[in-house]
Length: 211
Image (tube, rainbow, N blue to C red):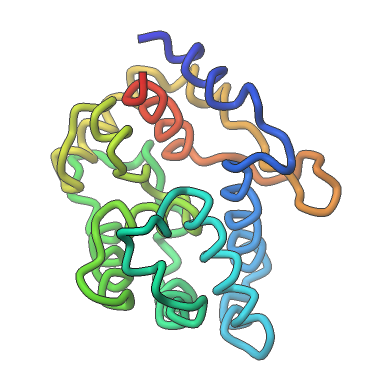
C-alpha cells in the first residue's frame, strides 16, 4: 500500500471550505477548550448550543445525517448529553492515541465509547460513536465502511486497536511526518494543533477502502 499516496489523495484538495475540513473546525473547538483547561465551559450558556452545532455539522459533513439516519429526524439539541459526556470524560482520553494502543485493551477508549453511546438516541452504531471520538478527542479512527474495508477490521474492539497500534509502530516515521496542522476557521491558515496519529491512520485506510 502506498501510504503517502493515500495521504496525498486525502489531503490534496484540503482547503478552508472543503467538506472534510469540518473535522478541523470541530476538533479545534474541543481541543482548544481542553488546552485551556476549560472543558466545563462547553456546557455553559450559548457555548452549549455552539458545542452541539460544531459536533452536528461535522457529523453531517462526514455522512452521519443521511436519509436513513435517526439523527436526520433530530435537532442539534439531541447532542446535549453527548457534550456532557465529552466535557466529563477522563483527562486520559485526551492524551490517548495510536502510539499507546499496546495490547488493544485500551480501557479508557472503550469506557468513553460506552458513555457516548449511552448519551445518543436509540442504539448508536460504532461508526457514529467513533466519528464523535475522532472529531473531539482524536483518540481513535472512525470505524466507517471505508476504513473497515481498507484496514480489514470489521469490529471496533481490542483486536482492531491492537492491529492499528502495530501498524503505527511499523510506519511511525511516515505517520509522524504527516501529522499536518488543522486549518483555522477564521483565517484558513494552519493552527498550532496537529492531527493525531489516529486521524492520520484514519485517512490512510479511508482512501484504501474507497479505492
